[in-house]
Image (cartoon, rainbow, N blue to C red; front, side, top):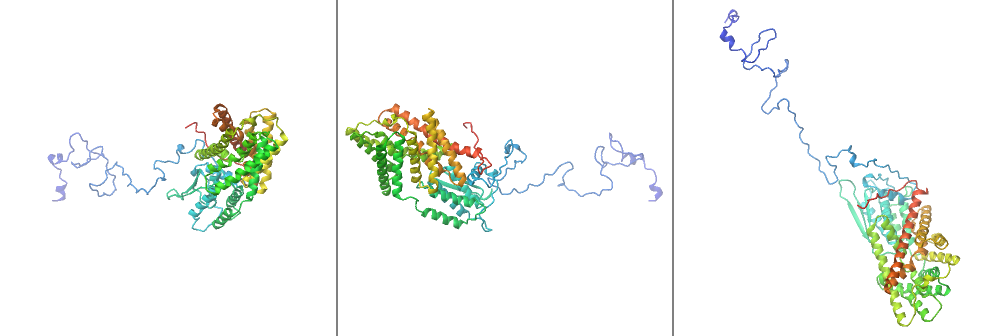
Length: 564
């Protein structure tokens, strides 16, 4: 075919075969264009000129569809993994006012610093700075936990409160770099749990306290050890800490047995003077208390429980009181019995139980109060047994004769309160350097009580609460001055304030079918015990909150639950 033939005009039929179907407009850019049935309809995107054609298949993604990224394999999580829906911007995971800034200065006693952190959630506690150095492998976690448990055992056995025991255990763990620790203290069981990280398994250890012995000299030594462990300038290795603990257990008591027996007599005689007794009552009560103390030691050597020891120890003072009544001596038998039993009253356990309840340790508080109840029942059983035989022999006993005493003698009663506090300090095995201060503290407490109750005619409960608050305040000041425990400065000082006669008369009245008078005296005893415990605790809190004595911070308290 020649070029001329190619340029020949086509026929109408041939030209109509390539026209677009009806309803479609032909594309014209001022020039006629040739179309076919494969031409793109109007409204569809036309590929831009100059682009190379792409090879596609039936598996190609159509235009306009988005492809979701392939799912990534989720990391292996645990119960402590952050939820996928968690967002750091959500305000519901933080307090409305933000997380409070906690600054722990190193000038305050370690007790305050540890209490502050124990009352904080684990996630808000500041990271510790290990005080005691260890190798690159880290601290020996089982040995550190065992050391903290042994220290807590000595403190709890010595009569320390549950909150202070937890603070000491927490201080030992943090001094060796174990920050994620949670100590737990009950009446007979100590436990501590440490979790290295959010995904590691926790390590838990526990220890049982089977025997309690109030030895405040050992208690002061334990506090000194914890203070050295918490001090960044004193390096104490685990071996050195274990060696010092072994020495504390081997050390003998600072006072011999005869001194303890003499202290029991002095305490009973001083207590009998406080309830209205004279010289003969003083001697009778002292002799009865010393006999009861020796009998209790004999029963303890034979392995009898403490309940029976208290029962046996309560019989000699009651027997001496009955004997003086049968001899028609001009003495107050109830004063002799009350003074002789005063050395048996578990005053520290009673106050410690109420304090544990105030600080939120309700299980330990209930156990302490139940123990006190058993001791009181043992005392009453011993006294009533002797009184029954006395009545059968014709003794004319008037249980409440001591309540109708003569006019108070302030000088004599102040001297008796000083002697009672001194005797309590010796019985508690206190350090000799603290005996004088606690004796003076007990005298001050009785002066405050006498000034309010006798001179000011204020109720005994309110007077006792204020006097106990003074004891707690002065005891906390002395403890902070020496960076030691407050127990040696407060326990013996509250001796003159203990509700000895009210408790005895209340239980005795109920046992003799005088329910009304017995319940009245027992209610008064409970009120006095609560007043002593709340007063001592409030005095300590006041010293922490308002007095700038080595402390510039306030520990965080538990929020009010409004009953739920």
